[in-house]
Amino acid sequence: MRSFLLRGVSAAVVGLFLTQGALAFDPTGNAAADAFLKRIETGDSKIVSIGDVSEDGDQVIIEMIVLEGSKPETGKLEIGVTTLTGAEEQADGKLALGGLALEEVTLTADKSVITIAQLVATEVVIPSAADIAKGDSSSAPGYGTVEVEGVNILDESKKEVSIDSLYLATSAMEGKWPTAGELQLTGLIIDPAHFEEEGKKTFTELGYEKLSMDLASNFTWSPTSGDLDIPQLDLTFADMGKLSMALKVGGLTADVVNKLEAAKENTEESLALLQGLSVTTLSIGFDNNSVVERVLDQQAKAAGTDRAGFVTQLKAGLPMMLAILQNPEFQTSVSTALSSFLDKPGSLKIEAKPAQPVPVAQIMGTAMLAPQTLPQVLGVKVMANGQ
View 1 (spheres, rainbow, N blue to C red):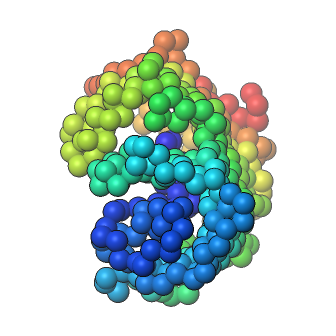
View 2: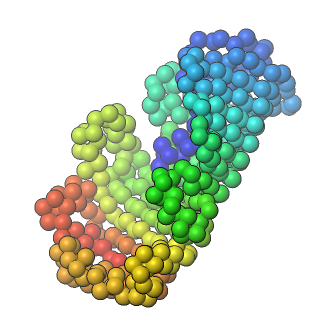
View 3: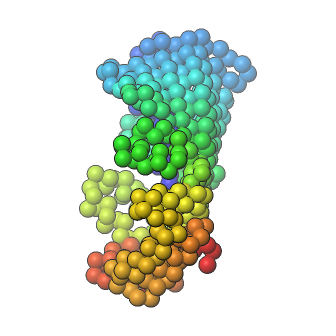
């Protein structure tokens, strides 16, 4: 979750060029502006021009920063207006800002164009040159909150993705580690032109012109105990439904996170580390908002029948399809829930809530040796329409 929060759309723009390189721009004479510019210039991307620099109280305003890469694929970054509030260069080399605002941002790279109307961040900490050079988690910028508005992504084929707004917040810290935070994304719109031909055809047949999604999530984490709680991860799709997930795991200490980062190129070692975690709870739910009816109608039409007839066929085939589980008791509960959902597509939820936290190593071993017992090991329940 930390990686996701710190390296989202906003952090990608703030940290995109945070790799130290030789100073190539002409100093502006303003200490705060020069400290910031020095940190956004990289070995592969150099500042080619800077507009006017002015001060207003504790704010420093830099107009029209343009950076270009040494290679065509590196791209070009233009920032119309940059406002630094309360800038202070610290003894450890970090640059602390009470606020950072970027307006009219355009990134052009590899024939794609990303534009951002505005990005506003609070309590920003841009790492020192030494930390940036490490290229690990210490090289990521820190922040209290980030709000981004008006994101538009256009690829080389002129296919578009847009985001109305994005909000990220780190509400608690323990040393360098964020221990609580949230993410809110609204109005993510994807043109069906991005889909493969078959997917595009299916999407159109279901009566949709675009894919529109909102996302909401929050988390708490203890680097000491290793308890990670993600009580909310909701994906809401307009005129389709909402997918909700929640997760509690143990054993994800700061030490484990550091080891996972060090082993990111070693799959075997990463898997070994993950086996030391334990699952406390896991749930996945779906609240229908017309997409199930649309799919049933589409499939019924293809089968030459109506929805009611197609649902009857599906329900009749459930026992045979679920026999692969080789767990009669669980098969019955799943069949009952699915039948209820097909009759009245409301909500469907799968929840794993074992009596005691289950080590990932045990889950993997059970999956290989006796997969039919996993529902009992994890305390899995399947519910439809709240029952």
